[in-house]
Length: 104
Image (cartoon, rainbow, N blue to C red; front, side, top):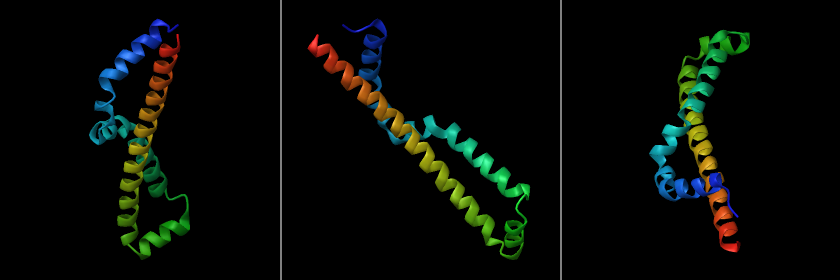
């Protein structure tokens, strides 16, 4: 027998599963985590705690561009990966509840 919470989740997921699978929705859902990661990387990069890295940046100015491109790629990866993982977890829960509902 399903609880009220499980029944509500089944109804919710039936209505929203296709919408939440879209890439644009996934980018919007995972953006705060990616932005937090980018801010911490930038703070670490510009804090100057590692003097050798600071010397390398002063010698070769294209290092800043490389770091910015890497941060953008990290943000996109983290955002898409976390959103897809969350979608997969909800999909798995939905399928388990449907099979549990069919058995009982």
